[in-house]
Image (cartoon, rainbow, N blue to C red; front, top):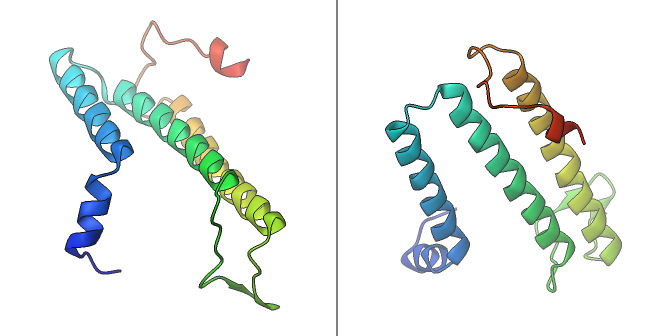
Length: 126
């Protein structure tokens, strides 16, 4: 995929890109100013990534113009039906979720030290 001026213009005209950049900048500034641990920063980014994944799943499920251009399976081309859209959305969510479950286990493992004393697992289990 080539980066063209029109692609860059489309990318930076998307408010979600600016919101994400701003959220990351605020996180970095707060982490530096408040001397956050690496583990705490990783928790912030894990939560952000989960939220992004859920929003993308929702966007995929509610697409008005769904295309399967360039998608094929062993049986040939994939038809752009509502069923296909749902299946592809769930496929994304399940795989994205499995990655984040592994990431969650990694964060709970204590590799990066003790959990912050104000961190509680309780709300995440409900």
